[in-house]
Amino acid sequence: MVSDGRYIKSEGHFKCYACEALSSQFADRLDFNQFYLSLHPDAVKDEFLRVASLYLFLVKRGDWYVNIQGSDPVVDYLTNSFKLVALFSLVESLSAERHVDFYEWLTMQDRDGSFPIADKRALSPLYREYKLAYGSIWRCVTFFDRLPSAHKEALCGAIKIKGKPLGSVRKVAEFLYNLRSKFVHEGQLALHISGSAVASVRAGIDTQLSMDVLSEAFEQGVLAHFRSRM
Image 1: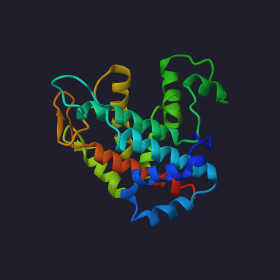
Image 2: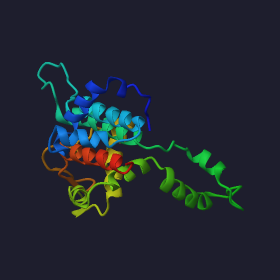
Image 3: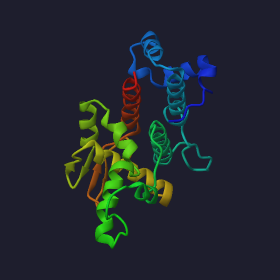
Image 4: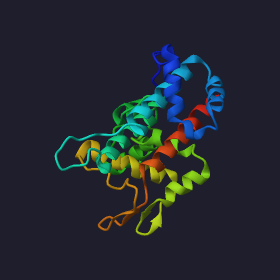
């Protein structure tokens, strides 16, 4: 978790940003203020202001603009690709746990007979155990798992593989994180996030995702995260 006090030092400005970012989750400004005042200590308030205000600028009110003749200034699959990266960056930043790479995790283990690791067959169960605890999406799974049941079901139903909806919110997190990683590491645009149904015949993937759906999930996840700390 990142908190250095810089946001609460300008609390008036950042509270306005946070309220605008999450306004759809509260009945009115009074409702938002009551939630904000329930956050303790000030470091938690600072963290809340950081995440909510960055979300406002990077995602909710932010778009990637292009200045190319013949092109729309905002192209949905371009801006959504960047927004997806921003969303997962904010989700991962909420975790208090630091990342541990596989080699470091192996050297931390205190088990008889773990070393030397004889072959791939012996290595595989160790790697599976590591992925459960410190894999690339473990923070994201925890975040999405806090969502209300109805919203988790809606997310699962919005992504179908070979005609079947995803079976768990972990699968949803894995799917979305993979879209994010394909863009970051391979330059593949997040085409599955749009306002209409998108089908990938080759992979058997059929999605009805939109940035509005993901934003709603993120906002609910943020509030669930901070409520869990009250």
